[in-house]
Amino acid sequence: YYYLDIHFGDELNYLMVPTLLIGIAAYAVAEMFNEVFGMAISTILQCFVADEELFEDTEERFAPGSLAGAIDSTQKKYKTKKKVSVESS
Image 1 (cartoon, rainbow, N blue to C red):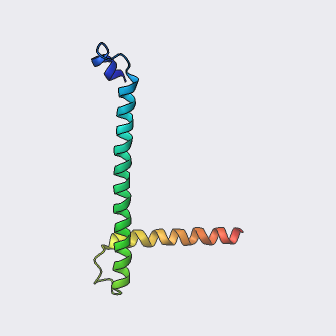
Image 2 (spheres, helix red, strand yellow):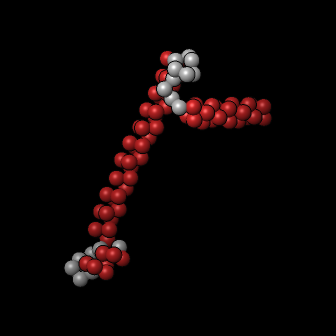
Image 3 (cartoon, rainbow, N blue to C red):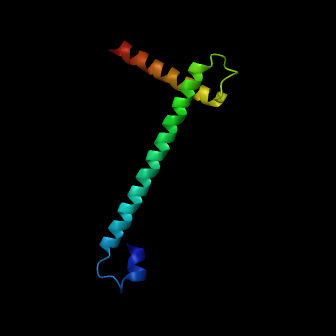
């Protein structure tokens, strides 16, 4: 708003319309980026699960050990959290 006011204040009668249009365009771009990012994460997880199911031997798998370690630690945290919530019920 202030940038438009400084540079185009004499030429524009109402600055809120261009400001709102820029805001809407920025929101749309950010939303599309988040959708693509989410789809990429889902695809990586789906490929990891398929890799685990197809190859029983860990040395034949294509997924790096760091990804497997991150998923295993997340599963352990979820299982302990689930046990605590069941015990407290």
